[in-house]
View: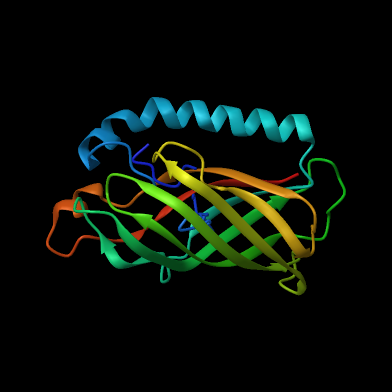
Length: 211
């Protein structure tokens, strides 16, 4: 919400994703950046399987692949570091592509552009009290706008990087009342956490479902 992963439970942004959320979703850390990288693969594989199973059980109305926009990834202000946690803002764009409707109820949506923003108390070791909102603009196969959706995600308390922050609810517009969830693989370099500039932006790709 979203493995050299960091879009796990953000997610934020996660949308985390929230993720963040959506976005900003997207960033809880368990231990140091190096430890998170080592532990990522097995934890993320498990969360990915769980998310897929849940989507099947609930017969998702819509499932899309997702990736951070090349020119507008999730950016953090101030940058994340291994130092003491502080209030951080995350903002960026997530592209939803190749959308399909497993239950056949949403057949006109082919893609979407999710603009997400969120806040959390975070550093490169952990995240807490994530709150994120997002707006998706949906398009059909011809590129015509077919509606919008307003998303929200809130995760009180602390979370680890490998928890799924990519989950929340559609509060208005298309798919109102449905729950969204996702899993993602981070492509950002976690070593930036120890660089002078800090960890400034999150990039990654994955999958998001609305059920």
